[in-house]
Picture (cartoon, rainbow, N blue to C red):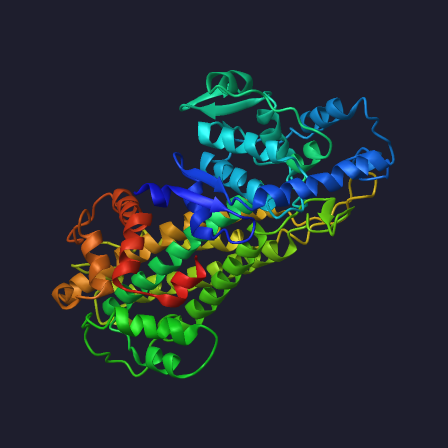
Length: 511
């Protein structure tokens, strides 16, 4: 990868999903757009003027939460901001991935560059220095109700001031030790900066973006596997032709992509008058998912280029804001989860249909010798389990409501919980797609039509054939399914397919 692709310039307005994903990996570089220095400095002056005037300002001249009416004296300002970070470093659970934490640092920097955070440029320099030094705060996932990731962002802030733990040079280290070895000093947060560090959704927003990029890739894979299932079933392409003709959301875009990508896959003409709905309505199910993905992508782009601080600097005033509630992004992700469950149900139904002799004309459960080899009979239970697990993760968490902070905080989205559920769901979905791909490959083998598939479906079969031989007799299938997942759920390979079989709506949505 060239140095150009390892560097991203942040300006608070134009960060993309693909750029943020890139910044989630180690060895990348962040630059701040030159004009942002004055923007940040101007916003900081508003905070300093508020301090001089003594006007009540939440988290600046007063304490926070239930103690919002307690005044913070000038003498206790520095200790209060450190104490704020310590008190909000309470998240538990296994540490979240370093990729997500790196992305969270980028999100926090970018949102501050909008000029609404009111922090010093020196704070952003400190975060940048930590990012470039490869110091990744140890952040644990359980501790946010989805209205600012207080318990999680507190752990990022703690690392910045040299407290708590982090990951550095591949090891878990104390923050003080890591900063010292990197030649950095602990940062001393000034007025409002403690609150700006904790009162942000940067960790859950970063997790959402990383997961969205994964969801886009799995969606592309789901369509590639769909073509193999169509070939194995000898399903009709007529519904694709019909879907491409009528304006109905992004379904025509998807149908056009499938007609083009599978054009050189020459499977046998269908013999049945009608295919099962999991084949016939695939464009409608997948097309709706594409719309949900693209909508979530746009909302995520809006979110990473918007300030979620409270209070915010606006028109040279420090005022309260409700943008700490990431309602749009949360509901977009929950819509996505429901759509994934629908795609999983269709995938399971195609797996079941491919095993039915009366529908395919092939042997039951795609065995080479009916009754002697069991083939996909017993393993279908795995597919059912995967579908049930995916459906189980699609229930809405955001509707839960609990009032905390002495009655002051009575709205929440549970965005971190939603991202944890989505992460599990995507993992199950990848496994189910691998299952469908393996089953469909066997159907194509039994028809003896592998050499007729020279489009996207053929590429999927070629990929699977790197490790998976056809089933001629029963064997331990666990290794086959795990190999299928490893082969197909491969970011680099999926991106290569997308370059070969261009899908404009998909590519635009995931930018």
